Length: 353
Image (tube, rainbow, N blue to C red):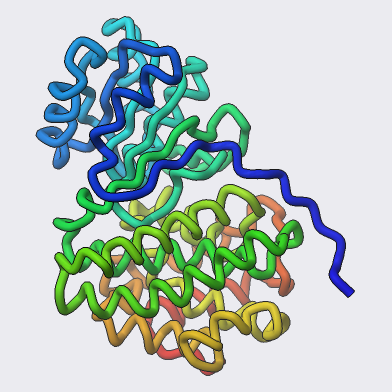
């Protein structure tokens, strides 16, 4: 018998294909706006300026100061720029850092958002905002955070570096992994996540060998959309909590941290919900945690928190911070459990399960 479920529906308008960046102006007009502030990181400033130039008078300017983990002080600077430019909308061009900044502006000003992702990390389809202040990252959900439009352009991913291709894909897989056992999961999201597992398993090895393979890029970007949608529809648990602790309190790189944690958090929860995580073991090998570790190693992903620069002396404090606020997880845990999990991720050992 099919279990009862609630599917809230997907409200964000999505454009997917090659060359879809050219439709940004039409989407801006469809939303009823004519002065968009284009956002990016410093590294993508030229791309943001090129988009602003293409939009012509519909662009209010460029703010190229987006930073990892969405520091509140950067958001304050961006809001000042938004007001000074008399902007009425934001366009976020880039990865999770830029998407986060757009959300932070939107939730404070009521501005509509158009997001144009250039990685696979997957926050663009969500109502989630994680912000850093005072050395800690806090996360909240609010319908006002969810972007109105997301434009996926395969062409923008053709130059994505191989390292970021791999780590942002594993970041996306983490969204799907937690969606499989979420208490508010539903058949639509589960189907999208199963599809994403197969698509990433097929496409990422191809992209490691041939980064400009257009078919593989399209497949990976489709998988990223599926995982981002999952992240935006159901609740997350231990994995995402630990990633936010390490990012917000220790400055760890976002996608790489997700990639390293993924096999270990999967293994921890697979001990009690192996049936729910079977779609992962079906694709990557059983048991699920070890299968993901083997896949990560095969595509040259980082495997240890030590290699990312986290000091072993920080693991105790990270475990303590992770328990500060109560949150659901399919397998109960203590501070010792989390400390042991982090030790394994710090060492980069292959999970036994």
